[in-house]
Image 1 (tube, rainbow, N blue to C red):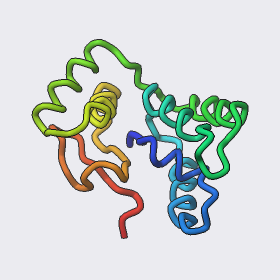
Image 2 (cartoon, rainbow, N blue to C red):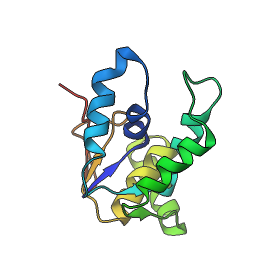
Image 3 (cartoon, rainbow, N blue to C red):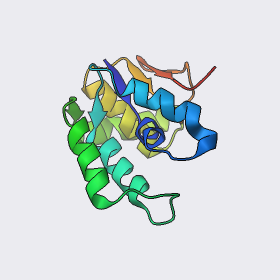
Length: 136
């Protein structure tokens, strides 16, 4: 089961014409039935999608309805074990804590693949491989 990073969700609701190909690809990914999210990813989506400085921000109701829709997928919880593992991964791979927390939530959920534009595509983080679904 692939783990979905926040950027996939944000592209799915992106209204910009110059991001149309990524938006279409993100929507196609979200039609799958084998995805995994984390609480962190859903929180980040809400904050970014509703921020007033965003081009055409979503309303609270729109963002909440999407989150409720995505809750049909398994959602990895933030735990002390995930926190500790993320701190170790951050240090070992020299990545941001937030990226490490996403990776460790994916690992805790039993995923081997993380769909993300933000991490190094193809890189293996101790058994988790990053795939950029927008790469040519």
